[in-house]
Length: 291
Image (cartoon, rainbow, N blue to C red; front, top):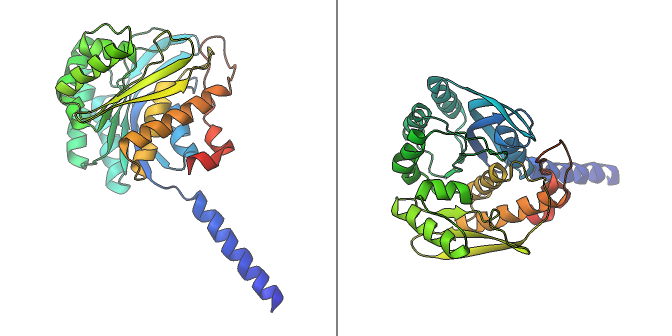
């Protein structure tokens, strides 16, 4: 009888452990790839997986890059981007969608049509426009279409300061400028805006600004001095998508995602000769903070 109870309890314990490993939600990532693995689809998949969700993808472009910069970009046909989105969602419906690199008007229009078909309610947009090394990843017509048609279809847009400047034709030199730019995006029918403050030259802290029509929230974190921050924007938006898809509020998702990114930066991975990647496995090492 004791042996029987031992195996019964062991089986119950194993089931509990397996349930913890079961993905908590499903995320569709619409973005470009990064051959170096630090940003883009690769960073998105790592983030979503590390935070306990299931990642699906629709690749918009293949970029040839490493930590020193982008060598070339190979666009995927817009029809095939739509096919990836729609065929995947026909079988496995996502709880949330993260959108990254959309490099042309035809791609944006295809994505909008697909979003209208699949009707997923939780969508995060990271308006990827410039690579870490300075290469431009989107043209002017696409920027205008993103502003006029796509922004109003998503729950949150997460530009960094250079991207917010492009979207609002505003020069950002301070926290007050960030808030002003965010309110301009709200007037463009954005529901919620998170402007990332890492580009401001503050010595001790980074301040990200979360804004909607009802509130302004400053998410403050200690600045980590490192050159290894490749893919932080992709990682942040994917982390927000993961938390948001699991039932967290949008503001809370932004706060938790910021903590995850900062912790991942602290590992200071020195891979490559340029802007190195961050450690997406940080949530597994300190998993209690991310449950």
